[in-house]
Structures are given as structure tokens and as C-alpha cells.
Image (cartoon, rainbow, N blue to C red; front, side, top):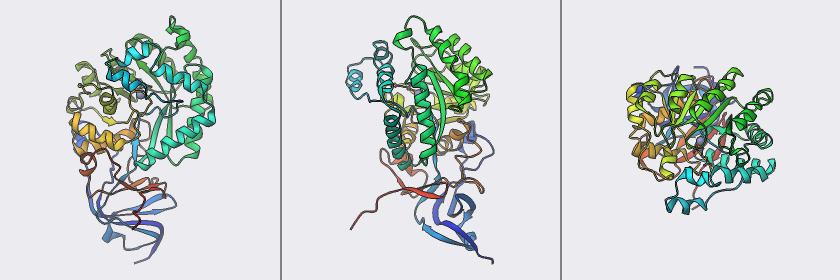
Length: 421
Ligand SMILES: N=CN[C@@H](CCC(=O)O)C(=O)O
Ligand SMILES: [Zn+2]
């Protein structure tokens, strides 16, 4: 047996989830979950060079050996819907919500998204970068290694570009990989209250610049009562598609306007939220060209009782993914593990479906199906070692952080502090 020298060897893994799949998993396929017991992973120069059983890994001699006895090991989690670059915070809105003031009413009164717009306009790039890094550090510590990040708290050329540039810097400087989305059409700014069409023209006029500076891969819009109509969204997104952007829609979050149908019609890469999606929308998702990204943390935080109809979507054959929707208003949490628990309890998704949703399907919903969300020989070693004996445990034991160690591109980037005796 020839010895093979590698940088890192993980061995004696109680349960190893390789999450290998040629494409996203839809409908019943979401129940598929291969488990390797007593598994091992060898990593060299940031890449996975072996994945299999510990007994098959005897040829590897590693600089660093990590004994994963009793532990679960999975790919780094992928969070495909966040609003991570923003100024200020909105803790004062919690009391308004408790008094029964609806989310869209707070927005109508100039609060909500519009108050974050004010704070983001005022913040310097350095401040936004520092804040973004802090949130990303926290995400990493919770096991997330790839994140989608939206702009949308500028609503003017200068601030939207500032947010996108900060996201680019974060991607270049932080271990987490960031995938950027231009969400200039996130709300109607006060200055354009009476002329949303003019505002959308101004945002469309930015698309070339965003493309040339390589500041975003996707374009998104908030299709919602009091924000943008389905018709406005269709015109706006058609322009973005023509310019070569992938499309996303904040669809049917509060009112069932038909954003899901529009996303499927335009072959958007994802339709997000989907709390009010119609039967027709569910049927269209079964086409499997648009990923349904569900954000149950938002429904929970907005204090609603009705959640997205995940079961019906999966039964219809849709590709379902999950995300935190991390933002300062409707979902202030970086913790994707908590979302996994809410998905189990409120969306009634099975643990197998949930793991597919936060790895393979999440990666496909942001154009990273070929690089993230799976442990495959030759790919970047983005790996999480969990203080949990099996995959059922993460959605079950809720609200806390189960991460032991996070490895990104072969390097340990986060580790639970050992208790000092
Ligand atoms: N609903 C629109 N956008 C965000 C919330 C943004 C905010 O409230 O600041 C969402 O996805 O929930
Ligand atoms: Zn959002």
C-alpha cells in the first residue's frame, strides 16, 4: 500500500453525509440521503481527495488528523437568501409588531425597509463592511459556508452600488463565499412615492453598470401589495434577463399576488417566500426549473400562523430550499440551524428533506450547484463537524449552535471553544 500524504484527515465519523447529486433534488427525491457510517474524508490543498469509510482511508498520512468519533459531518450549509449588508437595526419595531401593526403598514408609514434605507445611506463603506463581517462571522460559526447577499437598502444609484461593492469586498476578504443579487427594486423610496415606474426605470438604468463592474449575478424584485405589481415586475425582470442576469422574486410573501407564477413563467432561478402561493403556482413549480426558497423564519418572526405549503410543493414535485432571510426587519437571525427546526415543526418537512434543502438545493438556487453543497472528490473542502451523533439531531435540538468545527477550502475557520477544566 503506497502512502499518500495529505493536509487533513477526518476519520471515525459516526455519520457522514456526502450529499452527492448530479442535479437539485425535487419532490420525492428530497427524501434521498446517503449516509456513510464510520466515514472518513481526506483533504489536500483545500480540496477533497477522498471520501468513504475509515477502513478505506488507511493509505492517507495527514499533517492533521481529526477524530470525529460520535460526530456528524456534512457539507458546509448554503444560505441562499439574505440581506446581510445594511445600516442600523430595527429592534424598536418589535413592540409595533406586538401591538398588531402589520409589516406592510409599518412600511407604508415610512418605517420598515425605508428606515433601514435611511441608515444604509448614512453608513460609510467601512461601517457596512465591518457590520457585514460581523454577521458573516456569526453565520460561519453556525456552519454556513456559502451565502447569497442582496442589495436593496439604497434605492438610489449611489447607495445600491455602495452595498454591492461592500458585498464584493466581503466575498474577497471573508472565508464565506458570497453570491450577490441586485435588489434595487426592494421598495418604493419616499422620493418616488407617486411614480414607481420612474423609479423602476432608474433602477433598470443601473443594470449595465452592475454588469460591467461584475457586482451581481442575479436581479430580484419585491412583488407585493404597495410595492411592485406583477406587471411592473414582469417588465423590469425581462430587462434584467435580456442583460444576462439570473432572476429571483420576493413572491407571495404577504399577499397572494402571483409572483410565484411570474417566477416560473420567466424561468427565474428561484421564487422566494411563497407563503401565499396559489395552487396554480404550486403546479408551475413542479416544472422544476425554478427553485422554491422557503423562509419560515420570516413567517415565524412576523408572528403569522400560516406558513408556506411546503408539503404540497414537495408532493407536487417541486425543488424546495430553505434560507434564513437574514435582515434587520422580518428575520433578524444568522442561524440556519434554527430555520431547519422551524422547517421541521411548521413546514412539516422531514429531516432528509431539510438536509437536501440547505445543501444541494440551496446551492442550485444561487447558481452554485457545481461548487457548493456537496462533498465530492475534487471540490473545495467546505465541511462541518457537528457535536451531534446523527443528522436527525440538528432540527430536533433547537435554538442552539451544534457546530464543533467549520472547515472552509480545507482550513479550519471556526471552532467551538473547548471548556477549560
Ligand atoms: N420582504 C422584503 N424583504 C425582506 C425584508 C426586508 C426588511 O424588512 O428589511 C424579506 O425578504 O423579508
Ligand atoms: Zn428577502
